[in-house]
Amino acid sequence: MSSVADKIRFEPSPLPAELDELRREVRAFLEETLADYPAAVRSHSWEAYDAEFSARLGARGWLGMTLPTEYGGHGRSAFERYVVVEECLVAGAPTAFHWVADRQSGPLLVRYANEAQKKRIIPQIAAGKACFAIGMSEPNSGSDLASLRTRAERTANGWLVNGTKIWTSNAHRANYMIALFRTDPDPNKKHAALSQFLIDLSAVEGVTPRPIKNLAGGRNFNEVSFVDVELPEDALIGTEGQGWKQVTEELAYERSGPERYLSCFFLLRKLIDAVRDKASPATMARLGAQVAWATTLRNMSLSIAAKLNAGEDPALAASVVKDLGCQFEQALPGLAQELCELEPTLDGFGLEYQQVLGNLVQVAPSFSLRGGTPEIMRGIIAKGLGVR
Image (cartoon, rainbow, N blue to C red; front, side, top):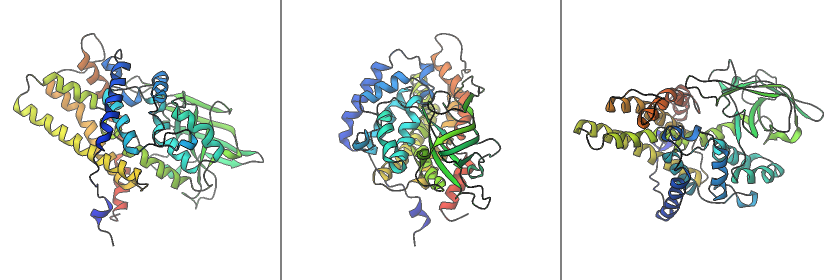
């Protein structure tokens, strides 16, 4: 019988030394490609959208890296992908166009999609030419994803979909959406009534995304309505009624990567640059604590990359990294403002540090919503440890 410690163990998994050359290559590419990107733009990191940049990354073979070569991927390791993702995040590269596709949609399709879907779509993901949206959350469902009500009903030719999704990032720009719908009206089948579907947004009618302006002025989120949307029979991903299992596996990819502690890392770099020549011992100690926290989270995230590389299920460990990483990211803007004694701003010239700080002060509160709230994460952890 395994102990609690065994269930949540993070085995040390340092990156292989042979990946140093890949890191140097990626870093040089980013320094050249992003030379004209202002710091304020870079601070948006993986929420910044630039389809041309994604295509350039794909042309270098740095997207779809872990996907099988027979479907257009590159058959490389999770560690190699980790290096590329880490360098992009630290540099503040605009990765939103390809982010969802490369992180979770591609692996999900490889595992559950039919052959035709794989052969048609995986090459697009690897080339950085497919933008995906995730249709999960719904109005009035709160954090209880399994209570969703959007229906996909069987018809003579496939499926008829009606309902609404919300907080769907980049749905107004996406080429495809992977959505979770209810395919069985039986109220006693809460989880077993859910199925996943692949939607080609350019080939269907009745899907209407409406961008939602957030407090920071961004319009990445959407409310998406489905009105009598007709999907072909083969839009179903995997097996009918297995959507909950599939989406749980998908979320493990979403919750475990370096983006769970590197969303504000560009600010940490700017903070160190701003205080390095005049920092007191107390300030250096506080910065050291932040660097130590980030290093610990990196080691935990690398441990999960090793699990993925070995084909293991990292869901429980991924929830721990997501929860702790969110705490780190949300604390950083306040510390950065305190140590520099500067007000955050989005205006003016020559105020690079303050502009980066101004952006992240506004968006950091949303970090705890992405990929599941802290309450959801802690509930998953408690259940996985057998204490709930």
